[in-house]
Length: 329
Image (tube, rainbow, N blue to C red; front, side):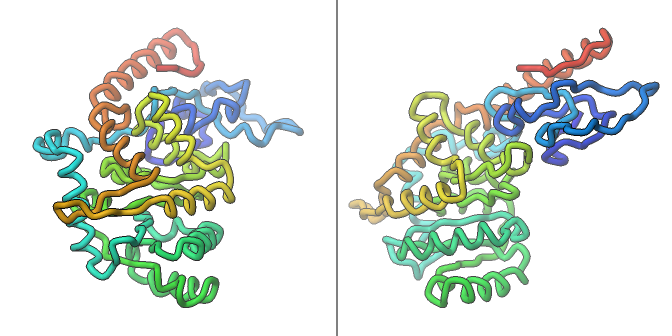
């Protein structure tokens, strides 16, 4: 079985199953004649005219919601369950001021915490256009690695000018617990469409920060992971489905348009206690993510373990019976 080590097909006939879901691996990308080779079988070349979009040779174990697994719920401090929405807003604003004291209260913080190699030219140009259209916005990136900062700043200045380039903000990579905690400061996480955020996406959604993604290819699993993880973090209600539809773009143009619309629609007003209260669709989605994180599929590790153990049993029973085929949980 293949799971999480590589986000895609291994292209190896000896791999029986890959753990996934219908967002990460759309059923239409599966070869209709898939089957596992026996040691006595003879390898053959594909016939001429073979459909190029049939990427996966493995049988698929289709998980509920998302196939991604993480331990945020059971590894966090027990006191987190008693935090109120008002307390969450207050500590989020306090952390924002500690991290970025020079930013004005009306600044919109978009960000990405992936390693910088995931930012290819098309995505970076899109981000610069977004900054140009949202004058009060900044994009927060990590020095991951440190050499990347100078290269991206130089490229941003050449492509978009000094003013837009000045609104790229870099911070050092933080320890895991601090990274997860400060992710709440970001107003909108801008995913990298070519190779998505994976574990980082789960970290961001645990902090209740909305994530905008683009599943760029139907056949490339690593470009679809964030959409899968996002769906797992949202409730199955109509409200959750509407949020998913807004945050999962269908094209490069839609990705850019959604980012601009969501960022320009967000504003902050100061509460009587002196912290910023968000108003707009992004604020609504943040509260939705915050309210659902203790009940959603993504952070229900116990249910995931039960499901995958069921899948192991079914896979073994099929192997003993000499059968193959996908498994739906």
